[in-house]
Length: 603
Image (cartoon, rainbow, N blue to C red; front, side, top):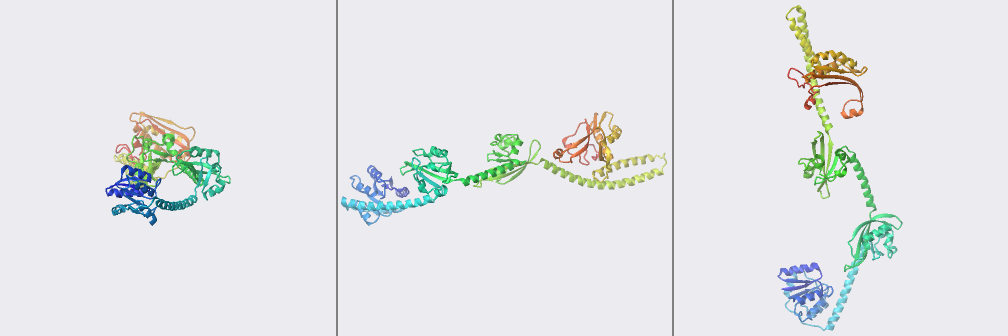
């Protein structure tokens, strides 16, 4: 069955069309009476279902025209409308030849059942005059109902219009104000509607520049242009200037023709004030981040640097323009691809903070902490990376562990040295008693001399152990360092081999310092012995003295000492030197590179 469906309501027409198509019908669609008549004349449908309230030609006029057409008058016509309802309307519609009248629009899913109930077609006719009388009476009443409905809807619109807190200004093509909503206009500008209607919109602008700007963008066009949100300055009735956003757009009628302008104005003074406060807070926050001695950067999911603080730029030695937008792995690690193991990757993958320690090629140790930044959808938009140089901290930790180890060894060494010294004292006493009982030419006397000589060496070893454990009592007194070295020169020449030249350079004057002279001599002899071993093919050993000032910068740089004047003793040889691994352990007790039996490591 071919059905012509005439209905102005798009949603209802769609529902009915689907219901008919499910029953195997072929459906033609029209939105007004004139279009429906032309389609019926062209396609000759098997059935016409029409609404009553239609544009251009309404349902009753369409019915009359169909039933007076020789080609179309035999087509069954169902009148389906809640616009024309009541007994009088129903009789009129039936008198014009309608096969059925539904004065309340039936549901789409019931339409087929109603169609199948139609078995007869009424043939009663009324005169043309009677038809026109009924038709005009009904149409007049319906138009009155429509007008009342329109007025009601207009009142609702006006209530809504006046309840909006933003100012709405309606103006004509020349930008003369036609309407302004209240109380918003009074609250924002201080003007009543009567004070504005008929005036040009220029009265609301703070300056000519803003008036011309909005005109150039939207209002000066006589044809339709897309609305725009613009920011300009306005002026209140009391002269106060304030910033505002205006949604400027063209006013069009139901046919789409431009008939004027509309401006929706919102006072944004408070918002700008808040934005300025946020800018100040951001400046302070950025100043804080830039003052921190840490590398701080914001990384995007594409591994690009979105922001970096001043310390990062200074560390890299690059301008901001050469850092922002580049890959983090390229900037920090000089790599061509993202690192597989890093804190930034872990935060992106887990959504949690991460901590990694990284050693750079310059042997510095960096502690890298990362924190994921999430947006309102709880998606990770970026990762904040904070890198801190902890090289000195790690060195101090290592020094602390070394000091704790040294302290433990020192306590052990001190206890052993005391006990060992007591044993040596007893051996020395017995050896001395043996000598006293012997004749000078006794062959055994030679052995007792060797015993006493070995005891002296063992005593020197216990002295070193006690000095290391800091249990040896030092004999501190003012001594001339230059004189100590002069007195030691002959002894040093005996310690050194003949192929080693000794050079001594002493500062002018006396260098007085509180020292234990014996300990100074002990240190210099041990250094000379080590230097001799380090120069197997001969060389030069140089000892020099000087008076130096240590300032606060030196203490801060090296991490030890106190500012003041000091005596400097320098010992230098031309030997083979030592490896870095050896240099790192030179102050450890019992550490030596010499063969077993040739050194104790306590020098």
